[in-house]
Length: 80
Image (cartoon, rainbow, N blue to C red; front, top):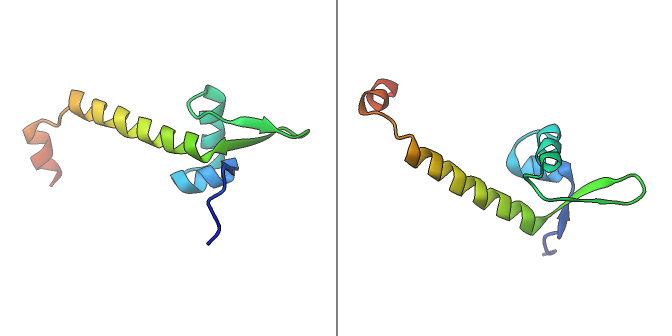
């Protein structure tokens, strides 16, 4: 079995995150997801470790948001 690649294209990242390449490009350009530009045509690459770090940060941010904004009891029962 081949080892996982160290660097991913924006399309690869989009597939992992189940989103569009345009959304991944926006994350990179905003600095939310660290990436590098390589080659004369400036192709973007995201290191696998950076992607995993981004995912972990998003889990932590989501948990903090959920903890700070709990569902009211009546809201939870009306959704069922």
